[in-house]
Length: 170
Image 1 (cartoon, one colour):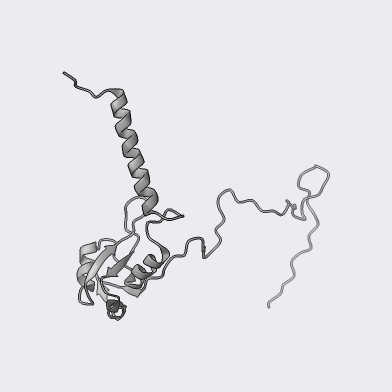
Image 2 (cartoon, helix red, strand yellow):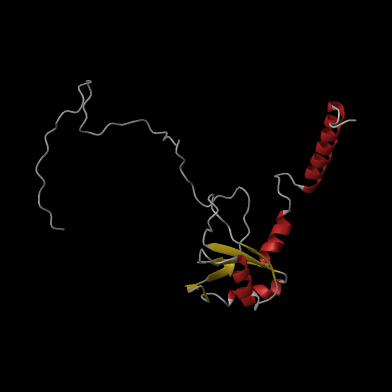
């Protein structure tokens, strides 16, 4: 009576499963690891809208019901932060591209007492940053230059003569 499989058979099964998964992974994903091509993403984004100023207590079903009068809603996505709290905006994807103009007319409509900001969803292009952000480890290339109140000679800060401020009304 065998309760546990032999280590060899277990390793063979794990290796065959791993080979199948890697084959599926490489055939489904492109060069940068995205499962959809840029053209497919643009097509989906052309059927989607951005909804801003969404109440934090609002659910995907409530947003779906709010926009179903514009057309058939395929998906509602509410992004969350690292703690799982909603970020305050959502994306609504419609089945038909002709439903997007109807949804754009619902800009400034009320949901949970808040005016929604509705606009067409834009497609992210990988590698296109919109701004430069300095990280915590950022160091300037300019060398350190002490302020004029410091003097060389290794004696620390030495008081320098300052003229009294003159009154300048303008």
